[in-house]
Image 1 (cartoon, rainbow, N blue to C red):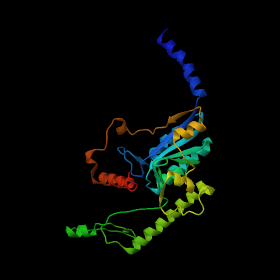
Image 2: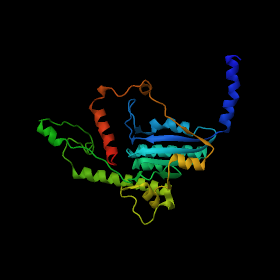
Image 3: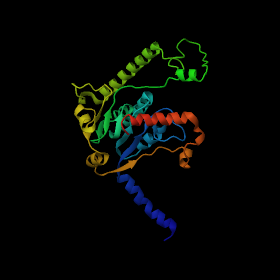
Image 4: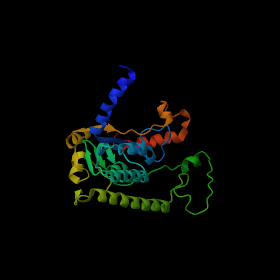
Amino acid sequence: MSVTDKLTSRLPMIADHRDKSDVVSVVKLHGVITPHSTPFSRGTLNINSVESALTRAFGHDKLQAVALLINSPGGAPTQSGLIAERIRELAADKQVPVLAFCEDVAASGGYWLACAADEIYAHRTSMVGSIGVVSGGFGFNQLIERFGIERRLYTAGENKRRLDPFQPEDPADVAWLKGMHEQLHQLFADWVRERRGSKLAEEADLFTGDVWLGAKAEELGLVDGVGTLREVVGKRFPDAEITVAEPKKPLLAKLGLGAPAAAGASALLHAIEQRTSWSRFGL
């Protein structure tokens, strides 16, 4: 038999396998949620970095469900919202259930992503919640004074220099920032109530920014159960094939190249910020 005949003889088998196999597609949402991704960065999430994986996940013909593997300490609220809304848009278009599985941590923006699912599951050791808003920075005004550095900043508009780290902290700026936090906090709480509804424990204050382990999170209604992807999907869709939808890799990542040493201080600070986000949960 020729090589061509051998290949041709196998084509119907491949086609039959695809036609008969139901699929549960898995999307890994791992990392800090930030708009500041680069062609070199790993372990960050934003709408651009996950779009290709989400599109692939929802693109199967025999799709039975989409599973989200979430391991994130949170991050940028806008990116959290954009990703969650994209998941809901694709789920409505394909008319399939979405299941979220919390790994080490699904906190803050990570829990925002989990709420995009129709059902949420956690491991008994998962840290879930942190429904709140946080931001931070540094004050360098005394540092530059010590070294005799003069700050020169020119603006049009009296509020353009708000929260300038090289100026002494202004109570009016802090009040403005807290007002923004309160608005974002309310939007976060509204999203959780919209998605979790009557499942939430009525007597508990769930919006203090606290986190809970998996079993307690189930008791509070933040998750639907304690279990892993293999356990839950194996019972719900026993005949389905589990496939992982990987995002398209940037060219430099395909070549196996990491961030260059010349990335500079901004890249270092960005890495420190990411490390700090994880360390808040002991990770």
